[in-house]
Amino acid sequence: MSSTLEEQLKSVEVKPSTDEKEAAVRVQKLDKFGRAYGTGRRKGSVARVWLKPGNGEVIVNGKPVLKYFTRSVLQTIVMQPFTISNRAGRYDVWCTVNGGGLSGQAGAVRHGISRALADYEPELRSVLKPAGMMTRDSRTVERKKFGLMKARRSFQFSKR
Image 1 (tube, helix red, strand yellow):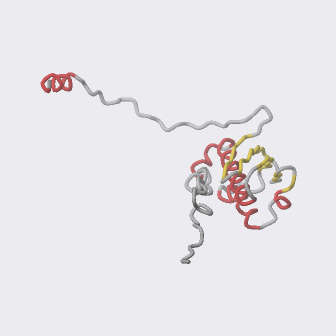
Image 2 (cartoon, one colour; image 1 turned 135 degrees about the vertical axis):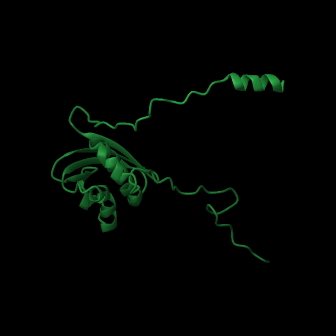
Image 3 (cartoon, helix red, strand yellow; image 1 turned 180 degrees about the horizontal axis):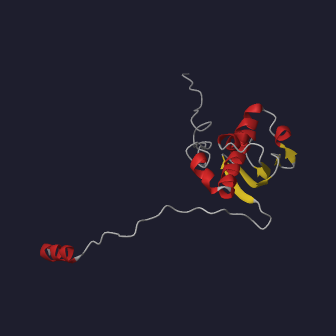
């Protein structure tokens, strides 16, 4: 049996690939209205983001970003893709976001903006990806376990 296996291995020829694999060439993806679309997710939140050239107006669920995200930290999170790529004030953003809390929603909008920017300007992907903007943050709430009060908190021990 081993002799036939050795013969089979000898008969198989390994051909080196002569054609070089080229890096995937990314192309601009736009809808019929000239907008780029990106879906962002974070915790329990999902954001649908449309991006088009404009004067930097960001609308979240029908409200300006400064009214929807009142905390400056959340406003900074939402604008991070533009500041990293030096595109602040060049694009209008319209998005709908639902689920989760405000922190998760801000992260979802940031993820969606990054994806839409990468679709509108494919060369920006090499700037956004190392900064962590293109990666979905997979951290979610740990589930509650049977026999415990919360995910890890147990009931108070009583000696007597």
